[in-house]
Amino acid sequence: MSKQQPHEFISPVWRDGIFKGRVAFVTGGAGDICSAQTRALVYLGADACIIGRNVEKTEAAAIDIAKVRKGARVIGIGNVDVRNFETLKKAADRCVAELGSIDFVIAGAAGNFVSPLAGLSPNAFKTVIDIDTLGTFNTMKATIDHLVESAAAHVSPNPENSPPGGRFLAVSATFHYTGLPLQAHLSAAKAGVDSIVNSVALEYGPRGVMANVIAPGPIEGTEGMERLASADAVKEERESAAKMRLRPGIRGGSPGIPSGRWGTVRDIADATVFLFSAAADNVNGHVLVVDGGAWRRQGGSLGVGLDPGMQYPNFLLSGDVVFNVK
Ligand code: HXC
Image (cartoon, rainbow, N blue to C red):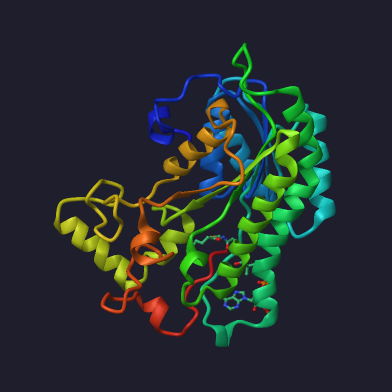
């Protein structure tokens, strides 16, 4: 990603420096989606602290993201599990000590695997709830005072049109709107994520903190989607797109998605930039679905149909656990 030109990872509509002097704190920041979100913020002037479990992966991602802008300060803090409030709080304190503030937060750490109910132990269910839902709560609790401070210091919009502060964003999903086979755990976890954010939006809105959610649809090129690509129905869809001389990501390349294309990490980065920009100053307690209209057409699926008349991918039918996004 670091070799990409700016227009490849962010829309050219954004103005340089709109996040200058602001600091983003991002859990799951080494993952495909969250690193793209962070890269966009850093490109537009922010500094960032990315948090992850794996030390090497997190530190390498920080170095890579920092390359996007000369002088960018990006810290990678590994060995932090969002399930553990204390380690997260320490990471937030370190971020403020080294970078000066926390103005934007992305709660992006997530855990998932495909499993039928029969194969889902209580601990497996709890594990995903703990990473996604408790993790979002912990992230919010560890950073909320900094966000209140930031919101008070950077009231937006202001006459100087300087960057805003005090923005919280959780990365959710669309699966729980309809339910999805083999995803009872993730559906429950993401419903919890949306609910926490909506409640906190009401509680902290009067203090200037805007809390929102982005719900990505199927995103091409991510680790999760790459694993899913081995599912037969996904393969077939890609092959049929190739026959049409189209490729995923190009409009028309994915007939199952109303917009006609797979989602990209850039889509999510652009939506994030909007929600953290001064343009979204009064957007609070909102779930921004970025999926090309996919869930309205076919439920919160993975870009393949869930209608009775449509073909299910093997991983949804087999009853076997066929992938574990680790
Ligand atoms: C059934 C499973 C399982 C599987 C683990 N478990 N994998 N059960 N099917 N495939 C069970 C274990 O048996 C255990 O229960 C419990 O879950 C905890 O497992 P651990 O391996 O000890 O957990 P841990 O090491 O904490 O790892 C958490 C994880 C792992 C969720 C299992 O996959 C992970 O860390 N993932 C992080 C990255 C990730 O998943 N990213 C994807 C996000 S995508 P027992 O009862 O045996 O003790 C996303 C949006 C959806 O969230 C996008 C769709 C592609």
